Length: 259
Image (cartoon, rainbow, N blue to C red; front, side):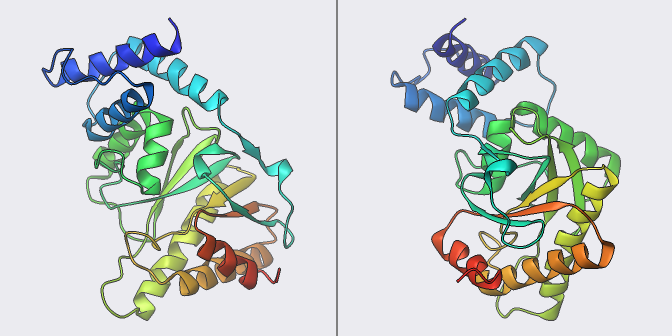
């Protein structure tokens, strides 16, 4: 089965789950087909799925990954001892763990092809990630509290693991409670990574997107919290601050003293 055949199989399977038989609006262009597959994966509820689907999905996602430029920690230069800054797509970073900024349901983004990091991570990890999160949430029995963290495998991502955390949502003025909860997100992820003997972790800009935490203050809390943790615990954890937007890159450059 080649990559186009895998793509067609995965689309047909997911459409059939919805009682939609091909040729239900299946586009002809490969890029449009890829977008349709991602949309179908995004909206799929966390219910059981066949092993054949997962095997073909994994082959498909791994082949797609092989066509991307993967960045390793060894390619990055630390700006401080054990602290790095990298601008790029976190789903292409080969590291022990990446941090996903999720919501309290912890099941990923259900909006087709949404631009949030939660959507990207679930899309490129594969169906298994939502299923793993569902098992965690079923066992927990309550929505994920803000400032805590959970761990899953990375599945089809270059990262071995994903750390899921729920940042504070800012409506109106920023408060000390918001700041405390954001600090807790970073600490919870670092502590969870240590518990699982991980050596490296990449943080996204938690809460600064859909949750409206001011970027400058969020960056300051992130840098201060990580620096204090490494100093106080004498941890050898290597920490990457991953940014996507230019404004965040400039903020972290300044905070880390690289200007």
